[in-house]
Length: 400
Image (cartoon, rainbow, N blue to C red; front, side):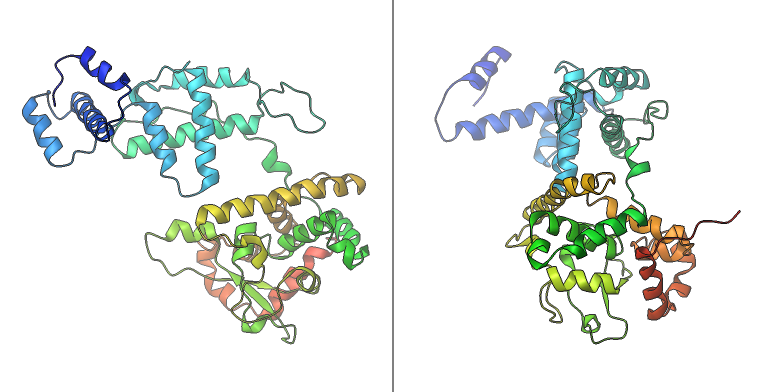
């Protein structure tokens, strides 16, 4: 099959033809066009039909310099659903900024990024939460997330040799408020604890009771995130009969980062303090070594994507149902993400050494942990238990 003009090609593309081989022919023609574009855009030499034949024969992988296409491909290759959604949302905004007109990767300059940043400041969120006015401007955190996604795309393009340098972003990147305020004090944690312990068994199983209980669980589990909580399994030394019962985990983020290397990862121990034991008795599965502690989080999900959806739903229910409780206790509204920073903050205010806090939350690859790995490995179970019990004790007021 051959075509002698662009008009003939466009006619073929737009034809409503039900022949089963039409899609295969169209895909092949589009592949040829991609190869032609790639040869023209690359710096390896001028276009020739011989070069085209060579590249097609060896299964040429086209060089994509179109920013929209490159961004889409990068997003599709991300393992985590949430990351793909973030990349896609950021690309949607960038498309709107460009009025749908794409741009070559080398043409994304610092000047263009500045114009994009100013454009974002004028955009509306499109999401109306309870108690908020419609047409609210994009938050600083959202704008920074969009710019970080664009920067990540350009960083990868440089690694792939598609651009010589990444444009400057430093004048447009600002610290948002969320990261500075996403922790609550031990005093407020104790308000939640008193609320939860005042409930009877039925109340603890209500939507609000479970939300508060599950948040306190995340907090007591070294500030664990929900996906790592879902992966916990009972161990032989998790029994209540042990002097210092424990659970353990390898942080998923660290695990993913080291998958290609096949590195032996350090396991972090979670002491089961008395408050955590009460919460486990209410919400965990019966103790059985090797069995999941919280099988209800993943449920029947098998694929990674299905598991992520289950975890998102788990987090969403906590955030939704704990909000009214927070209001009634006169504390700021919290989400599951607050548990980690609140755990870190509680230990820090008690003066617990940074190396232990680093270890407890799974920062096993940091410089501090690496330097003090031997010391942490020799830390007694009793000492770890004592450290973790401080998260339910109001820190002393510092003396000048």
